[in-house]
Image 1 (cartoon, rainbow, N blue to C red):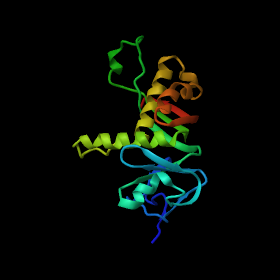
Image 2 (cartoon, rainbow, N blue to C red):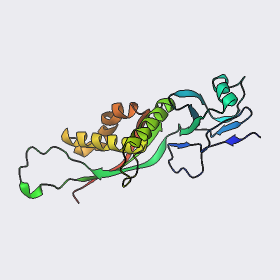
Image 3 (spheres, rainbow, N blue to C red):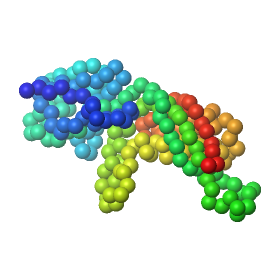
Image 4 (tube, one colour):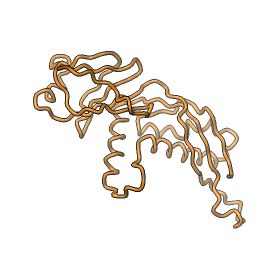
Length: 205
């Protein structure tokens, strides 16, 4: 019986979500929203991608997937949002350089940044490869006390680091304008771009 393959409903990450199945058959259909790409991952690399619409999987229409129809080899499907996603919130402490202030009374205090941005995935294949690399890299960590890191955690960390650079460069009055340029190279390595900064607040609390 043919299956309809879509993003899992219980996945709350707006940038991407995994299908909860593991094998596909000829005749299955993959449904992508108008701003969504399905990335097929075989455990080591991207096999193929499918864009918006409903696609029936056959050996003729999806030659790269034909081997997975025959021997039930596992295949992972990640649905990636390719339109701009707003409301991505980043919060955390940052540690700007302060060479002019030697007052030990403030030692240990770090300002906290609250940043809201709009992001867009520009390279779905690279994005998924990085997501898998991060998730599999955490398998070597036996500490069960912490939640495993995700690709969105790495994106947030890159944005915080770039905000810190802006402050160190004396751009505190225009972090919103300078942040996209600062964080651009780091995000491109993850297959993402920062479309705009929607809000920035710095607090000493």
